[in-house]
Length: 110
Image (cartoon, rainbow, N blue to C red; front, side):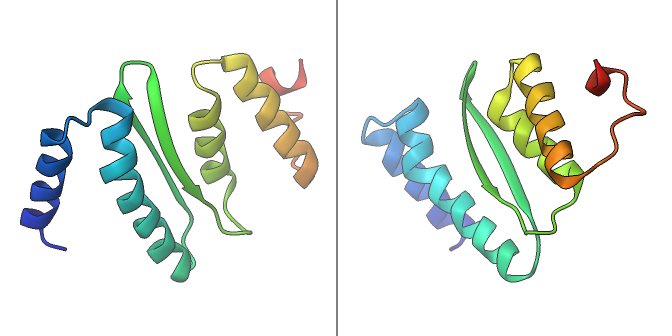
């Protein structure tokens, strides 16, 4: 797909009255899904978060089984933001499941 087709598709969605989440669902989410699949086929993890309106987000997450901690941290943040407590709790659970030592972290040990 060329940039022109993508631009025309986006313009079509906008002219059809789609905005915010509907436009994201119609135009962006499928493109992100395709990118995530391409990355996965090459052994790459994929995390994308889009704020289509202030405080409203959508995301696409496709992690490899051996994805690094950093990618899992990004995924957890995208899913739990802006709730910092939920982020820390979920990160701590993830580390515990994988046997990751968190003793050096003041936040994760309290």
